[in-house]
Image 1 (cartoon, rainbow, N blue to C red):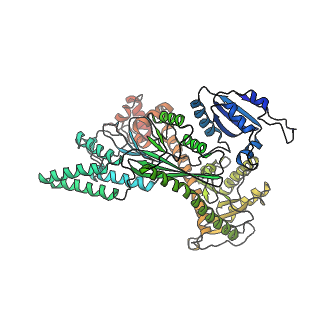
Image 2 (cartoon, one colour):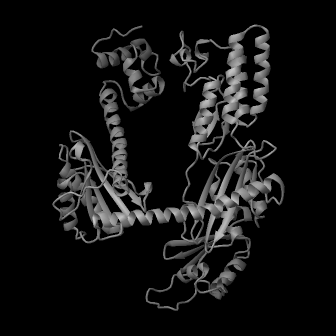
Image 3 (cartoon, rainbow, N blue to C red):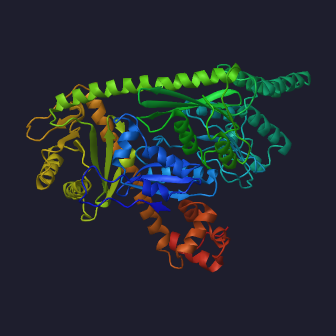
Length: 620
């Protein structure tokens, strides 16, 4: 690795360029990765097959002074290079460093969530259909991703209704089936009530449907229905008839977009001024199963580079690419990118830039979706502009409410007390800024003292990191508001942060809003967008707090029930839970069942049972 020295602190502009001729003379002509830095902050990460040639282009850049590249270069104080053996290594390292540092001038995909997949556990003797968000190399079959939860639930409902495979996570042999069998939702392989060959035929039909080959399943079911009718097995014929109707009704609105049954991802790109919209269509088995889009605000680089970075960031070992990627143009590093994607998929991946036919129609659809990103963004900005203006006017805020935080205190008679802080930025949840605070100073039910502690910790950290909200919303009335006024006064933040509280003191009066210095509450109509927005924020703080509080209570309950039993340490407790499945199952188990757990034995089993139940009459 080589690096230019940082300029002295006393040096004033113009200062010596970090891409000086002396520095460039030390850079290799081989492949590698370069990082542009300002002090310790990474501004940009790039790769090159010839590092010296690529950096020389930056050194002799003569574009407009207000261009993105010129602005970025004006902030660069140091350049670091990392040599690699091959271009492919540089490609992989570049993607890794971008994910690690999230540089300001690189393409960063803000929506990095994994969409759900449908998994058929074909490795099991008795497979089942489940939802997962991770695609593992475990021999099971995966279908998706499904960006539309509605579409995925419709598919699952169809499969569960027409093909009642087992639902239970762990199948144990039973003498009598569970309630799912009685409701017609399972064939009860656990009780031996279904033939293995018939069960596997049903699994095969499920796989064909998920592959998009519904017509093939319908043909087979029709033949079975007619054969059953000929043999006067009318109940069986009716079952096949209902399956055919369900399949036809559910799939008749699905658009077939390709003659084949390949899995494809289709990328569309649309540039508007300096910004870029990228859209991704998921085609599975010849049908569109979902879409995803990204907005890249003023990214650095040409369209080819932006699309390449997007592809390399999007796919991973957990989110593997399909067999084909359709692109709006040929990429410069197509061979390298295809080779990298093939490694992730453990199979060939083709990058195609179609010019005609069905694939071209898919490309046009993806590009139209990419252009739609800008119109949706404009509508969203206009909607927020209207709401923010109304919010500022109705509450008479000094600051524009771009960032709103809401604090909620959750406790059970002072125990496991938690402060939950949620954050909304320009009308949307900012989940990465959510925070939980374990209350340290109080073990009695004193909401005011708990709120004071959390607010003091939040304000101190906010001042230290220069990260404070425009509006702080509290769940409560005048008392909670006064606590916040006192805390912000101590930190000299009353002019910096607007305060408000929301409470429903009487059911018939509805929600009341309180502001410092105002005697009477602000009453807004129940349908007011401002009130509905503030209620949404308050309810989100409730949800976030209660979820964490339940987790704390569960841990405390677990500790009180198992950790206090004589003879049970952490390892035996873990074995008990892994073997029996839950605390409830442990408490319900008899002495014989406890004794069968590895490492327990009859004597310790009787001791455990006696401490849980007060006797040892739980032998089976």
